[in-house]
Image 1: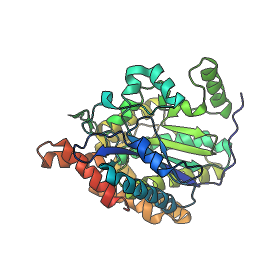
Image 2: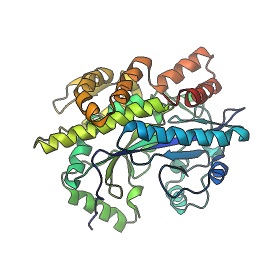
Image 3: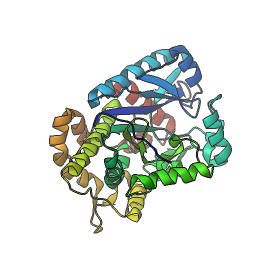
Length: 377
């Protein structure tokens, strides 16, 4: 089968931000999304707010934009509108990879969505465990021939993405010991996790044909890989990120993603190969970042050299500075250093719990404040 890759404007980006609804008094997850979406009304164009797997979740989606700041502005306007409608309902908003203490079996699947019904029917217990939230960043690629090598290059930086965004240290009331428990939860779905590393587009097409022939998937979007081609939009979609509690951090991570895609695109334009890692190194790096977050020592190259992920980031940022200038996202990319210096969300959550005698309700309150007061970043 042939899979067309839609024409797109190079390095244009879009961002999807999953937001959880919580009860203001208890801090528990709230099934408020259907009512909020009904109050918002239907959306037929970008930017917009839509539903997700669970009734406790809304997803805000930017319009395709050339500049990171414009995508972030779309998201913040939407969050402001949702928060305004949620206020009289006694509902607050948070974004993190997991909720610190709510229980999965108390959550409701969004009704009237056959795709969700099929997912739950097939995956059962693991599917019902998907009480998780993330951020997805699309970056447009103008030539289909570039897509797979750029994805291979991005897999080298998957642990950097995961460490910066890690925000799921708690699960169902327990401290998991992981920076991103979400990363390891999500990959339990049969079509989630790391993508195969293809060398030719026809290999991707053959895999999709096999999976459709055997009934594993019906649609391309059922391949829920951490980084995947998005042929409908002509983009590469990076889905590695945990839920992110402030728009400032989303801006930093979106800028890092956009700059890396453009960097690899320029390397290909110059006739150079994009460096890639062996699949077993990619897998190990993902686990290390999920476990240790900003303290992960990651594998940098095929030779097996290693470095603390924050040190590797600090060496990377100056190299991307000229690209950030050309994409007009210098300020957003610079905020990556703020995350390195101030700590990722999982670190902030752990500090709040420690300062409040282990109270996870205090952690939820801090996430509410971050989204409400810090989301303009």
